[in-house]
Image (cartoon, rainbow, N blue to C red; front, side, top):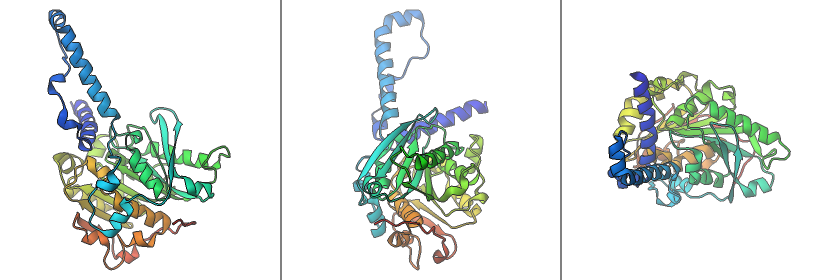
Length: 357
């Protein structure tokens, strides 16, 4: 019974994540549902109609699974309230490019976006790994990677549908280290391995916790962001169990405040608060108002980018969103339940070995 319920939850998670970030759900043709059981007589009488409906249903699902879940123009359309949030939601100063590298299943391929001009100048850049939510591989949100690359990061993801254990993150880190030492790679000595961050959404949020605490390369991460991460009970049920008391690097926890999927299944407010309390190191927590689970993948990206710029580049303007006497995120009307560990001036940041404008 539990196995069935678990499979249903996984399937529901993938579907809801897709629906939460597209408008296609509103146009579902319920009449296009597949016919699961038919007699041979029924099949003869309605064969053409059934085949047509089946084809329409399969086409719909294929389109849904391949559709982009982050709007290409989100950096221009997402609402902001703070000046710093607005700055880092906008595109950064660097021209970007993409490289895809094939790999073994279940990851299929690596999607790597990078700042062209910095690599041409032989500037070693910090890297950010992104872990997918259920049913949302990296190829479905290129705009998010492009945005990070425009701010000077080498952003990398993959197609792994099961990121919750953090294993694919660890494999991806190993790949970055390999590329950095490969004289035939365009990333040869271009990755600053002392400045590696990680972020993930939903199941990928659970994967973030596992990657930075229990995977072999956990000590390489300098900072982390978890976007609407699966709560502890749900993660344990789905075999993504993590231990937040082991988190050592500075971490930014974010969640939405809208929709039963977010508030009742994935991350109820009390669970987020409990999870935050278990982390002993530098930390920030916030909930974005009127934002559903799927939308959390990109609607808080202004502050996600600011956080990564602060932690991996030592960006002083970005730091003001979270530190000082009056951190911007505390007064931003789009966010609530903001918490910052101790006095903001005591938040540890990682001093980068290079800088970039």
